Image (tube, rainbow, N blue to C red):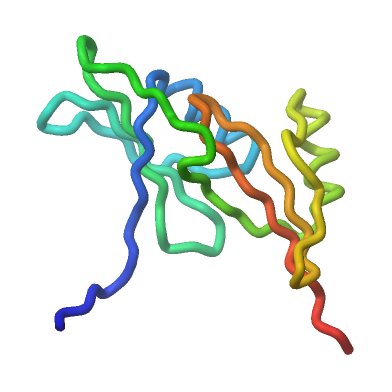
Length: 132
């Protein structure tokens, strides 16, 4: 059976590319690595995450295309943070708030969520510290 080499990117379709890109830059500090128009006319922006090779591709279809409607709890992105409490405090300073959590998981990690534009969720995870 053939195997893939590695995950390169994940695509999220949106109705408002600029609003979504601004959210990921402001809330999470992601960096736009490139932008272009696809052969079918979609506007694309690729976002890099610190310490990851994989990118997030944000795609806005050309005018006249059907709008995006994200089903609740269909898909989310999860990002590790060093300290969830301080991360949430910085979000609050920027006018954003957690939409759920913080919650302690069975493994001892701390998780919370923020709402991204278009109905997507973003999970923030502070991993449990190993027992010493």
